[in-house]
Structure formats: structure tokens, C-alpha cells
Length: 124
Image (cartoon, rainbow, N blue to C red):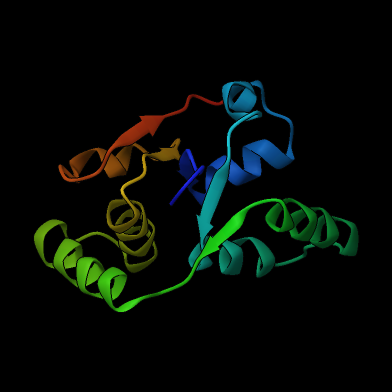
């Protein structure tokens, strides 16, 4: 993916939306996200119209990775090998297939050896 630097996991997008300093190094980077992250963000129970608009605005500034045959096949492989939850397997597979590092605070991704992972530590 030409010009794209990272795949952002759902939690990284949330930290970005909330202005968490852990995302400062990525503010000038080009990010993509899995279609799964969009679904997770926009289906949050109790989301306000303002929050939904902020999410949509952020996502409009990024590129979406749709499910492709390659991503589906890699997802199946990861689920079988690591017993990863389906949404996490899709996000990881998206990063692997696209050849991009994944930004996340979820240490569960550490088990996926094929993944180029950048763990972030949110500031609380």
C-alpha cells in the first residue's frame, strides 16, 4: 500500500479520537484500518451522534481495508494456529497481507509471529 505507514487497531483509533498522547508519534503518519474496526467503533452501545460524527470524520481521513480473499484465507490460518478471536484475526490478517505494521495496545497480538507489531502504551 503505497504511502501508507501503519494499520491502526480499533483501540489505537479510540486513543487517537480521544487525543491520548500515546498516539502522538503517529499523527503525521498515514493510517489504514480494517473494516472490522469501523464496525466495532460505530456499533458501540450508547454512542452519541457527536461521537459517531467524530469517528466517521477520522475514518474519512484514513483508508479502509476491505475483506479480500487473501485476508479471509490468512484469517482462517491465524485462527487455526493461534485460536485468536475472529475480529482480532481479521485485523492481524489485514496487516500481514498488506505488509504493514499493526499499531495496538492489545498485547494479545504478541502471539502472532507473522505480525509486524507496534505496541502502544496509553497514557491514563
